[in-house]
Length: 442
Image (cartoon, rainbow, N blue to C red; front, side):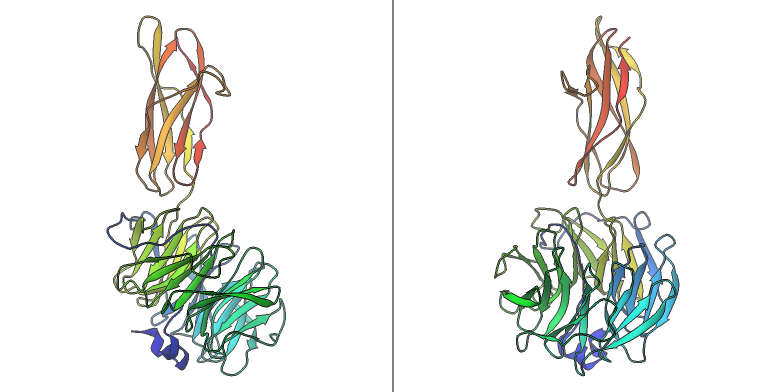
């Protein structure tokens, strides 16, 4: 069922997903891609109450996950360790929550689209602290919380941005956007700049120090629905009707690049992690796509279930992704990508290579962190590997989330000499070095 039928606001603009992320990435055409994560290994699904229809999800500083449930006018809290809902708070009747965000202090903010308000929730008691009224007809969609606790709300109905100072009971006077802007999402950059995705006029408004210094124009009929920004100020928008992703370089007044998805993807949510990998959810394909750094295509995909119909996504500080699936009343966690971890093990066998030379079997355990990882061993007569360092042949560890054993042979070791070795694991994030171990070439 199309959630857009739930209210006048949703009938007017369809759906929007709010996502915030840090890093760099590019969205590309979805096609035949490897699995982002295997079911059961690194994908976990949380079942919400029947008819919850979650449209947005957010992660708190304590790792707990919160879903805004439009169908039941509620917010559910999910324990990240168990994957189970441990508490649910009822919102005001007919609230139809559409956006959710968590502040640096853990307070939860929910945009109630149908009753023009923002609910503030205590994350410990899961009780509403207060319900902050917005001007009549605001129709709030997305919202975001700055590092200082200021809340920004994108008001689709009044083409405006509401600003709620930390701990305030009423918002400041709304900041007017362009006529017929139709704002649907908002995100705050690390420098405090505010970016608003204007669905109806295909633009992004940039707010700095309380004023809008520029408007970024996107390609015709783009209709941005979700927005994310990186540490350096690169902006990403997910464009539902055009099945595209716009990438906007810092300081630009136009879209720097537009990359297309396959027809029928219907991107709704977007996020970028700290390692520079972008993620997007396709509503009509019920799929999560990952786009590696510098890539022009989707490098991996995860199916969320044929009837998932995801709307929003959120990323944890560790890089895991949570999606709000309106079609089957679930929230899915998919493990993200991380730096590899490597453990150099004790020396294996030392064998004769020639009369005067020895070779030694080197061993390590490697955790790839979700990406294909190249593993090799470095060995040297110097503990700091500053001189006469050699490496073994590189071996590839497949992308995954389990420990794998890797071996390599150090050759040409002089009989009776001492050497040092360590394992090196490299994926698209970084190279990780294991601890240094000794070789005695007897």
